[in-house]
Image (cartoon, rainbow, N blue to C red; front, top):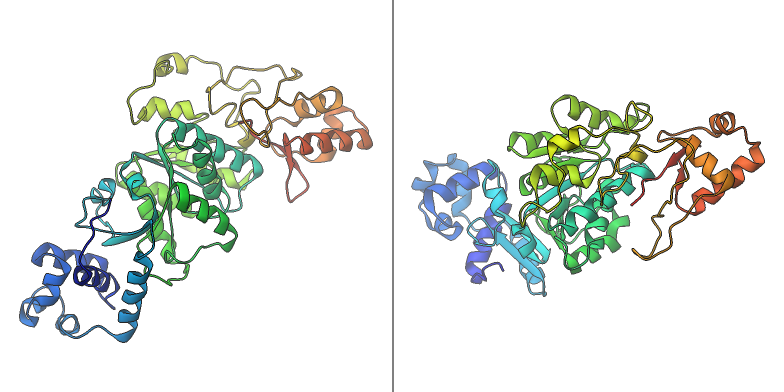
Length: 424
C-alpha cells in the first residue's frame, strides 16, 4: 500500500505537480538535485536559480497561488475516503515498470487497489468506434489473459478499451485484474457513458491518473495517458485501429520503451484493420489467439504447461479460406488457440456472447441460419451479397439473419452490412 505521508509532505508533492509553468522534466531534475519536494521549497532562491530559470526560482519561493491551494485542499479531501490513494515517485508502491521509462509521472491519484500496479501488465487498446467483432475480440483476449495472471491495462475509452476492462473483470477475483489510466482528473469520468464501468473498476481494479482534481479531458492529455498505458505494460495488444490512431501512439511508445507489440489482423476492407496491418508490417507480432501472446511472454507465474511450441505452431495450417483473417475470425477461440480449418458448409456450435457462463447451452445454427453463417465468412457482407451466395429469397434471408443477430452470432453494422461476431 502507498506510504501515509504527513500533510506537509503531501502538500509539497501536490504543489510540485501543480506548479504553473514547471515542466515534468524540470520537476524531476529538481528532485534529483535537491531531494523531496519540501526540501525544494526550503532551498534558497539563489540555489534554485542554478537549476531553473530565475523567474521560476522566484515563484517556488513565493506562497502558492490561491487556485493551487484550492486544488491541493480538494485533493487532500478526496484522500480522506477509503480506497483513495496518492502514489509519489518516492513511494515504494509506485509502479516499478514506470520507473524504467524516461518520463515517469511525479505522482498518481489512485482509486481502488494500488497493489495491481505492481502486477505484470498487458495493455489492450484500440478504436473507440470499434466493430462488434472487435469488442468481442478485446473482451475474449482480456478475459483469457487475465485468467492467466496478467493485469489488463487500458484507457477507459469507448470501444476496445471498455471491452478490455470488462473482459479482465470477467476473469473474476482470481484473475490479474485491470488498471484504467485516465486522461482526466480522478473525479471525472470521460466519456460519461463509461461511468458505471469506472465504478466497477474502482471496486475490483484501480483507476489512476497523474492529472489533478477537476482536470477535463483535453485532446493533448490523451497522448500523456497513452505513455502511461505503454509504460505500465510488458506488451501492448492493438485490436482495431485506423491508420491515424491514438492506439498507434501507444504502440510506438511501447516499442520505444522495449515492450512487445502485438496486433490482431482483420479484413483488408475494414478501415479499422489498417492500423493493425501497418503495425504488423513494421514488426509487430501477428496474433490470432491469447495463446500466441502467452507463447511470447509466458505467464506471470512462468510458462504454462501444454503451451504449443513456436515450431509446431508454425507448422499448423492457416485459415481454411486463406488470405487475410477477418476481424470476426481473429479469435477462433482465445481460450484454446484452436485454428484448425473448417469446411465452408460445416455446422459449428457457436457460444454466444450473452451466455451466462461456461455451462450455458451453445447456440447451434440450423437450416438457413447455418447456410447464412457459412456464406458470411469473416468480412462484412451486404445482404445482397449474402442472397447471391446462399440462393435464399430476401424474406428467408432476413429471417435467418434476425435469428443469428438475436443469438449474438452476427451483428449489423451502421452501413447495413453484416459481420460475424467472434466466439468467446
